[in-house]
Amino acid sequence: MDYPLIGGYVATFLVAIGYFAYNDSARQVPATVPQKQAAAASAATAMSVRTVAAAPAGVAKDGAKEPAKDVAKAPTGAAQPAEAGGWTVPDVDGLPDNAFGRMVRRGRELTQRTFAHLGPEVEDPAMRFAGNNLACQSCHLDAGTKEFGLPFVGVFGDFPQYRGREGRVATIEDRVNGCMTRSMDGKPLPWDSEPMVAFVTYIKFLSSNRPVGKPTPGRGTPKMAELSRPASPEKGAIVFQEHCASCHGPEGRGKRVGVAGDGKGYEFPPLGGTDTFNNGAGMARLITAASFVRANMPFGTSHDAPVLTVEEAWDVTAYVESLDRPQREGIETDYPNRTEKPVDAAYGPFPDTLPAAQHKYGPFQPIRDEIKKLKNKAADAAKTAH
Ligand code: HEC
Ligand code: HEC
View 1 (cartoon, helix red, strand yellow):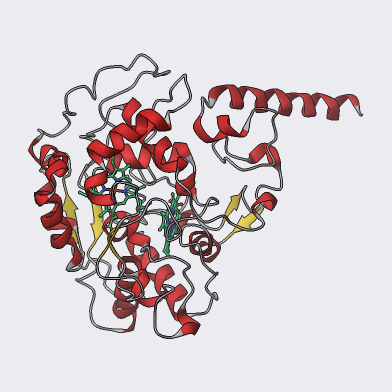
View 2 (cartoon, helix red, strand yellow; view 1 turned 45 degrees about the horizontal axis):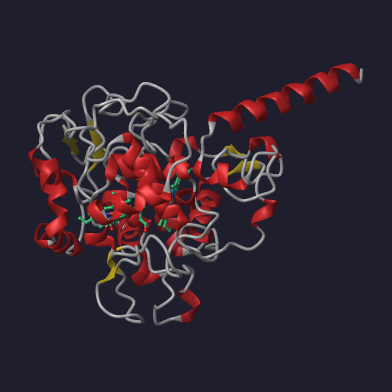
């Protein structure tokens, strides 16, 4: 290995410092960000971002700590504790200007500005792998470095892994292509292509010092208590207008940096419509998306100081999932072993007999119970067959 791992680790004590301090020290983000903050600050209803910054660490906004009556398990104001010693991210800028350092930084650039390199509006038609103008960073926040913002940190050592969706052991390249074809609504990247090598190199570097086989606290999104009722798109529409529309637009269509066709992407990404993630994406699943939203939205929110209550998060995300979006072809072949299908994958075929709407909006526990029964039955049948 010819690259210095100890290029300087940025220790970001999220819990101890406010959002803007965190923003200064950990965000390795291009010029679009201050723009976003300016827009957020000037938008009348984007007050919530400033509320987050002003809130003392660990304290949720009023109401967020109140157990809502429909919340099934004990809801909490904050997510599970961060790892001891704080959330650390390797210093990408500290890498030398050699082949490896350049490839890591290329991966970061592709993550932040995917639309400019692989999007449907780039000049070279051969490079139009993504079907929408999102960036990986639209969801993998702060270029995949934000705690509980679907970070890439620690992901490298978790692959290859068995994937229920594909019904086989999949590599990190397969996983990147899972997002290319679903979240980005596009085509898979060839494994030996420069963008794929860059993504994998970047993910590997961000996973430095994260042992293989050991989970990384802060990865993915936090666990969130579930509702005992279906999440409500109607109630969520009201929350959306209050907390989201100022950035994502009144109908969730996002706000472009420039104009359609210019390849410059979005200042605020679309959540619905033709230019967003398709129905086979992880963000199209309510459990995944609602916990992402509560821990990260309105933009600038951190998992330990959520702005939305648990109920608001479920309902507003149900509204997001109710928006129209691109439909993925061949989606019915996902999860060849149907009992492995996540309860919130809202497209059939289903292992159980519960309605599609319940898979989309919950409640989910009855689905889990039914799948468990099915599995037990199958196991009994296998025994008596002997
Ligand atoms: C619309 C949101 C969205 C976009 C855009 C997106 N992803 Fe993802 N990605 C997700 C979600 C959600 C998950 C976790 C899904 C799950 O629960 O399995 C995920 C998971 C991943 C993982 C595995 C992470 C882990 O913790 O196991 C990798 C690697 C990944 N994405 C890479 C990418 C890359 C590279 C891009 C851009 C080319 C991209 N993603 C774009 C939403 C997105
Ligand atoms: C202050 C502006 C702002 C507000 C308010 C805001 N968001 Fe976002 N949201 C963003 C930005 C910016 C991103 C993409 C992150 C990036 O590009 O760095 C994003 C990303 C997302 C994504 C993933 C990307 C995608 O296209 O699906 C979802 C889902 C989302 N927001 C939902 C919400 C919801 C729901 C609310 C209201 C509770 C909300 N946001 C409020 C700015 C905002």
